[in-house]
Image 1 (cartoon, chains in turn green, red):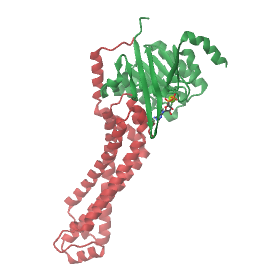
Image 2 (tube, protein in one colour; image 1 turned 120 degrees about the horizontal axis):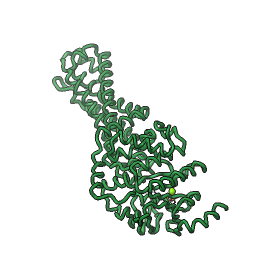
Image 3 (cartoon, each protein chain N blue to C red; image 1 turned 60 degrees about the horizontal axis):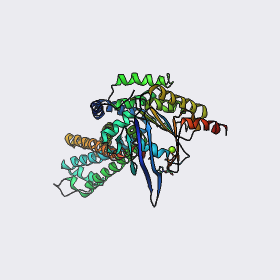
Image 4 (cartoon, each protein chain N blue to C red; image 1 turned 135 degrees about the vertical axis):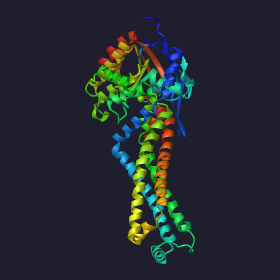
Length: 244
Length: 228
Ligand SMILES: Nc1ncnc2c1ncn2[C@@H]1O[C@H](COP(=O)(O)OP(=O)(O)O)[C@@H](O)[C@H]1O
Ligand SMILES: [Mg+2]
């Protein structure tokens, strides 16, 4: 593999929430770099700031201070069109609560980003069907989200995140609302996407099953990076964690 | 292998996002209206009732004016018995304070009812708006979707409501004053009343959706998704 470029760079990001009288500093200066094609897990206890970081990287929320660069472009400098383009083409999002559009079928949910991106209907449908097959939902094209199980909904969400062939997939606790076995299937699916499509995958999680598939794990505690571990360091520990 | 895209193809892709065809927006809107049929019927029913009331007031007033203008003293007497404040002979009936007050009141009812119904309908869908923005929808596209939906709802509801108001006002007037009520009325004036009802209903429906949809579309996607 050739030298991989830095696809995400986070520079001293702070995020402060104003709650009337007092303030909550959810991120207290986070700096990190992610290379194209990496599978990164952001680990940390509930309330440590994973979602806040995820939103900042994905351009879904503005940091109070600090910068986020995607492909060396400061996303705070993007205009509305460029930001929409970034969300549409460059990044695919997966949420803990799936966030499918309830009134649309599985297929329509998957094709929506393509339609937003200007693809014509026939092409989008063809691609949507192929993506749903890829995530193992061959016979559920015309089902609404309510008619699908949690695992199936998350598969639709994964297919949707792949709609426009993004360079990055951001997944915020993708297994958080799923049972153990389904969660493992979803993790395996994400790993496959990263391997076969060379997508950069960034997941926020407190699911230790994610450790085994990650290239690097970023531990975050109380709004700060606690430590960053490579796979080699991890392999030693995974045994410990699993056995305890 | 995904690499930096050349500036040129990126520009083209961005431009493609901008020109989302109206046909597709219309398609998505119609689909969304159909799927949410019962919820929409609730909004549309509010519209129908509010507009029916408004048109009813306008038409009733026009019918009374027709009777008054006929100059028939017997009809004027029935009008007075029915509770109309009669102006001095020769003056127009519509200029009485009571008439103007009634029209203003019905407009107010219309405004509160319709704007509230649309406001609620959009607020329920903040999460959907946030999700669409995550998927790369522009603010203007979100706004357009909601305006098309509100426009279609507004048109259907106002048309039905306005006709309903007309029918009820006619029927009631004929019950109270006999066939003369219809005979003395000016069809052009009644037609204008119906159009006014449709116009008011449509406009209020659009206004009611425009504000909350604009607020939601301008939010950061996460904020919109969090707002319930
Ligand atoms: N919109 C918000 N308003 C106020 N406080 C928030 C908001 N979002 C997150 N927080 C606070 O920021 C901290 C980090 O939250 P979050 O990023 O959601 O953590 P995690 O995803 O790791 O569970 C928590 O203390 C949380 O209460
Ligand atoms: Mg979280």
